[in-house]
Figure 1 (cartoon, rainbow, N blue to C red):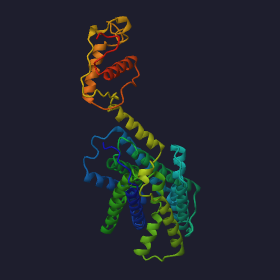
Figure 2: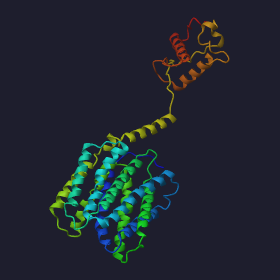
Figure 3: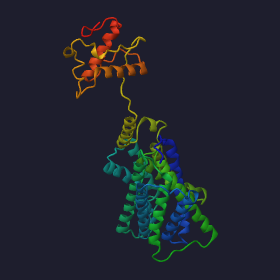
Figure 4: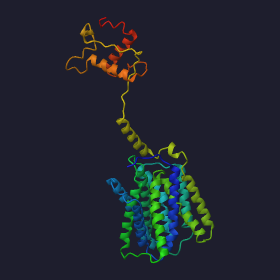
Length: 417
């Protein structure tokens, strides 16, 4: 499994804008197709086809996955799939404008859940983007008019719950993408889409499954499956590793702007003041959410991300730890070797007191031999090595320093000349 790469915020922002455009383009096509196909059947078919499309491009992407990857993919799919099923069931009892606004509230729910669940503070600039996005959502939905339709409180609660599930889906995906062990975006996307297709299919089988009956309808379904679902979800998973959860939710909430643009360009809908004001608010929100070029290098994505990186770095350093060497400059001369009988009085020689059999320290001869080998191997210049912690280390360093100063011509009074 690949390790974690350096964040590239601008690349993530571009991918998220593609996701928003792809999902925005799907809305008018779905609105046309559900006139001939039940919405539950359409959801089940598009997600199952999307998962099969990605699986066809990489048939072996699900091999060798860890248990955590399967569990996380299934949980993400359940969260998004339950939200889709609940939103589809509640749509029959809510005006489309009210339903769209309730789903758009996920842009406000995401930072609140981020504070509650992960204790991650949100910057004022991002809060301003959240407020602008929510204001633009109001202009594009509620203020454009609500058709005569009875509003069910239960359906509204279900739709708001779906919005909360979408926010939790975004937060969980962002949290998984920051794991030091790596983020398998492709197989995780396949598992998600397949799980969503199974859940929405369970809702659709109540009254049977209907399929498109004409070639244009199949073309619309292909666009919804391949572009909006397969590529959209894959781009979102890849982008989530580069952009934090709240800014990514702001960028993805710009779907009404893309829907309005498509309606004006392809369906020749009249451009009104509501579109202009709502589009301006959405554009301002996106500008506030767009990261700077140095955002990924200057600040990490959060305290938890820092702790994970520190833990991984500590583990790597522990495996490659090198003991500090005490450099000793011997001026190119061989280190003096003190014979075993060089000590005139064994009791007055502090280095020999622990060299007896069963002592806790090795003999002086072996210590000097080992130190001489290290010095000859390293050959590092330095002021000396008398910074050792142990008593024998300090005594050994003193001996070597005195030997260097005397240039082996005169030894300490403890040794025979």
